[in-house]
Length: 366
Image 1 (cartoon, rainbow, N blue to C red):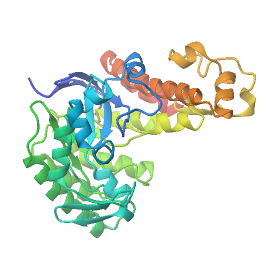
Image 2: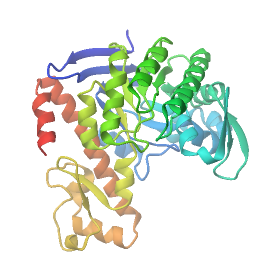
Image 3: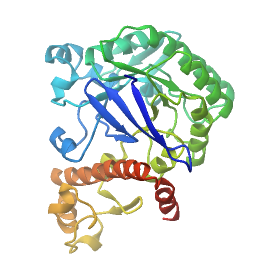
């Protein structure tokens, strides 16, 4: 059986409906993947993820390697057993930390010398090490080690970064994995279409199980992000899953599905929830801590069926947030993740029904 099963394409654009087969279950696409960087989706338990329909979550190689460390995860029997989660897990390779922790690292041809952001201790992380860590974690989807190109970058800087990424991903492709682990390559190239095309051709030649577009949502404008996707997507195989890393807002997800993307992740739902924000409607946000909700006993969103909206009012959640009660953060995080997961389901339903063009247009009008 092929790793990715292509079901249908929408006639109005490049939107696709498919199924990604993993050893721990099939993933219906397009899919949104909640982010659990350190082995936990912030403020949300695995049971709650199941109840809201999550199909897969993310973990991060860099952070899990530092804490709790491989000895503990190995003794636990792998990441799934350690965190009590039995559905698929995708692990990022640590390549994003090459970007986000730029002041704490030095790039070499074979990887990165890091000073730990926790205690300053020094360690080396490259494609060989990243694949070894992810093999120990026993995640279901393993990301190749790359350099997430910073923004802004000159064409010369972006090309140099791309050349490093191609070298590291070639090395990543050569490393052993456990039976059943899938390995995805990552396209870089910053905001330059010719570099995106070059990267896509080089990375797809390595024949990964799936492909990601990285180096987006790092400070560029939304239009630059869309152009980066448009430049890379035509050169990605039709018969393999496409993953847009770190994206994004609800509107961006709808628009990138129309550009042929199958998989998304973003910290925005839980991050916004922890700061008192809630998604409603067509991507609008409410600041629940606002005084106007002090006596508003309606749910966050009357149309929502999540646990928070079925049981609690805006007034109560506002009270929780304003007095620093953790439950408020939990309820808003549950609501926002439910919103994103339901958006992905609505997109799949529209693709199944042949109504995605109308669905997309309703978001554009909003």
